[in-house]
Image (tube, rainbow, N blue to C red):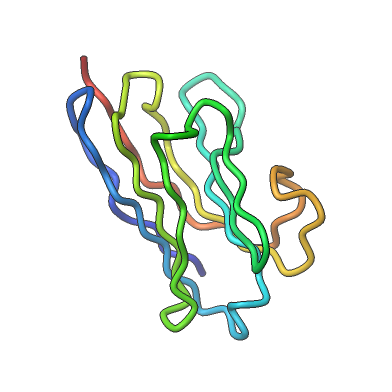
Length: 120
């Protein structure tokens, strides 16, 4: 069971740091990702990290940073310069054999979302 936290209500321009802890063993062999889903929209890729690669959606490049702590089996998403379009439920995901870091079907485990609301 993944547990994501760190969401909240902030004003545009503010920052938030999301965290996701997982009980997965051999965590370093897994890919971790963040997705988000805004009301009325499909879930979309935000960022992902595996042993070799970090990938970001174009709309977060330069603003968001994904990182992981293998010792804690945790992944983080530092979000800066938030805007109203970033309002969504944010989900962390874990996958062992992920070929496409952006593919929702690639991930085996999903956490409950943490809500990020950005006001103007």
